[in-house]
Amino acid sequence: MSIVNKKLETWVKELSDWTKPDAVHFCDGSQAEYDSLISRMLESGTLHRLNQDQFPGCYLHRSDPGDVARVEHCTFICSQKKEDAGPTNNWMSPDDARAKVWPLFKDAMKGRTMYVVPYLMGPEASPFSKVGVEITDSPYVAANMRIMTRMGKVALDRLGDSDDFVRGTHSLGDLSPERRFILHFPETREIWSVGSGYGGNALLGKKCHALRIASVQARDEGWLAEHMLILAITTPAGEKYHICAAFPSACGKTNLAMLIPPASMPGYKVETVGDDISWLNFGDDGRLYAINPENGFFGVVPGTSSKTNPNALASTKKNSIFTNVAETPDHLPWWEGHDDPAPATLTDWKGGEWHPGADHPAAHPNSRFTAPIANCPSASKDVESAKGVPIDAIVFGGRRAKLAPLVYESFSWQHGTFVGATMASETTAAATGAVGVVRRDPMAMLPFCGYNMGDYWNHWLSIGDKPGAKLPKVFHVNWFKRGADGKFIWPGFGDNLRVLDWMIRRVKGEDAAQETPIGYVPKRGSIAENGLNVSAEKWDELLKVAAADWREELSGIDEFFAKFGDKLPAGIREERDALAKRLG
Ligand code: GTP
Ligand code: SPV
Ligand code: MN
Image (tube, rainbow, N blue to C red; front, side, top):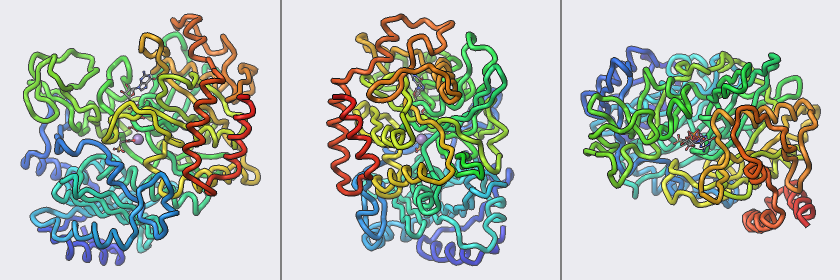
């Protein structure tokens, strides 16, 4: 394929002179090109063919066992000033990056093909969509980018001869964790990633572009780039509502986005617009409209079953890539939480022999599927909507074994921003490091905000100050509260619709809430209970707001806020003080 964009051509030339690939391939995004990428990877052993009768077009990839998740300690914001990265990001000066990391790309593509991957984040017809180009020496990355984004010609057509594209440079390098860096240059809209071939480290359109770089563009241009799913609910009365929800990694976005209503709630319909990232822009009517910049899912596999998430399961049945799952002797993918019990012998995610009862899981806890949105039975036609869908409610949430009630509603946009800013959640396998430790994760953006988190909160507050803004209500949920027996109290999954339904009724102004110091919680009996088996004691526990526990939480919040010094916005401090007062 020939390209016409001179800036792109010059950049590709510079990069190939430095990285010395054996060949350069400009991706056009065609099916034929994808097929040849797949054939090459089957030949080289990068991919394994799964059972084509049951999983047509599906393949398995086993990543390097030391390269299985995002690496937050190797992820840096390389703004000119350290202060612009803020206290929650790692910072490296652009000069240090050039001295320390750029040499890792020298000759790095020798013996490999360089793929030039132009991609469009967002629907083809949307004015809010943005172009990026990822240059990579990983055919696995190129193939995944074709599923995850609108890739190739469509992006180049959009770009024309413009210089307005995010430049992503990616090399597997030697896959050594010591030489692994994920760098973001917000001022020049560049990304450098070396030493990892995995997910958010390497598919640069996703977290690196659509969140870290886009969050900076969003601040500059007056919109929001968020780690949020987008779903539509149609009620039995035929009214349609749209909800965005921000939960940290592996905390239930994909599941909620693809929710199937419980049998005891007939007449409701849930449709999926996005499962991970939202770009929110103001419409002429003052409302926030969300587009999903992605075109596929990079979803958590373990725990996915016909009981928990049949839509995700269906999405993976064709033309999908599985990464780090186990494989049965019949070449079927298998994982913990699968509908079928494990067969007597499996090949585990590392390629070794595995038997039930082994001392490690057969599938990696962060094993993933890459699947086209078009495969999803619940996919909304608005995935292609140019202006996006109007948002009625924004939901924050995390994993909290204790403290946070099932759901509460904030008092105002400013208070909602405070609720997002003070989110906390137990860590998961989506990033390397300890699992199950409570950490602050504002707006589920802790690992993804491309600038000072204090300025980011200020940007959220400024969204609320826009003249004529008609803002969504802001809620907080916690599906993960545990009882004295250590088990989840709330059944979750499909039954989460009961909570969304309560939110919708609040949006409509129904008197279904009671005021507490932290916000409005449901009046007892106001969440649809028909067909649900939750005892009165459990409802008490689910909806409890204990002032003493929240006072303790407030001291944790204060500790976190102290990091921001005078970057902590006045509006956030006001909300903190007001909460302290309400708690007594
Ligand atoms: P990322 O792709 O990492 O951003 O994750 P995500 O937020 O999309 O999380 P996902 O929906 O994949 O869920 C992660 C894990 O949480 C899976 O193991 C799910 O089974 C589990 N989970 C999701 N929803 C619920 C719920 O309502 N209740 C309980 N108990 N577990 C849930
Ligand atoms: C997440 O960790 O939030 C993900 C997976 O969605 S990754 O693409 O690795 O970021
Ligand atoms: Mn995510």
